Length: 481
Image (cartoon, rainbow, N blue to C red):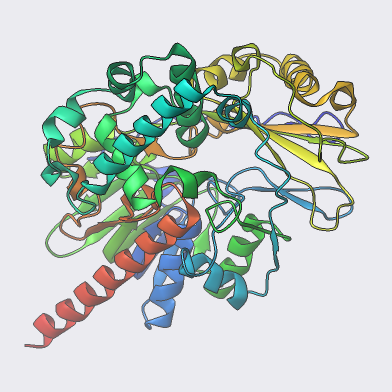
């Protein structure tokens, strides 16, 4: 995270020294541990799995490569304690996202409503300014998307009618075949970059439809009234994870990157920075693009390794500008060509008490990759100039500006989640959450619903915990018989 007034650039770099799987280096033998279960990754999914292990009376050790907990939940605190979420920031109501809402209540955090001052990106402006003929085409296009999404098999996308054809083409290809208006093509591109942080040419059409089906559709993804952008948390979502971790006591190790997982029919051995752990089961709760950095011995089935290697993380930079007054509220969006802006959309991100009126802007897809290589000052200048074109000259003069480039996170490598290029959804994607022997998997990418959301991460944690507890009980019964 970058903020000129108070922060230095993230200097963490990935550790590329992968050990030989046939030998454990001496410097990693400092700590020898045993546990029923090892959990890898202290994002909210991994922490929740560890909590459930303890509740079930199992011994657990949670290993995290980074020096903080939270994963893709990261909170920035101003000097007065006000929190801004650099990662996951919004949730839907309890009837849509029961798990995250229940945790917020359990740990005494406070939710507040997202300010609905209008969706302030250029997509909304373009949709509102359509002529009648263009709007008719857009409504037809949306209806066709809805019909296709309704047919998707959530549990096994490869069983979706026409799955092979839908998976063989990118969203870009499908868009060009079904939208004749260049104007609408640009609108749709912006929607894809906004919600998936990728370019339409890079993602499978079947994966896109699967997301629509399992996350409530386009309208729910965008909506701040009963959709996935309804509520925020006063204390920030990383605070939630930090409170959850307190229940783990000394069962967590930070700065402990996992290098090797040796697995057999009788047990697990995990080799990490400074330690070796033997266990009955292991839960890998890191994004697929990070799981492939672990050496498994014996190697995982080739079909699963191919799947993990093909799933790629999106790209996003999240930018905050804090002002003295929320001057943008009630002000019409200026008719600016979105292609002249480096960000895809903006939202009102003011603090709950209105002491810090703020705008948040998202740079996604190939633009995020480009601006990740530029200086902080150049990026700040471009973002503020873009905001000024949309909202007026007041936007040039924030009280405070900071951003977070998720591509620089060494143990995440992007955001919001991994996506499937063409050809992956029908080649084993349904197996992404299935255990392999004593190895189990969690994380939002393995969720059946709300993949890419906090709720999805928690769903995956519930499922992985059930699997592990049942397997341990079965092992006990077999040993006693």
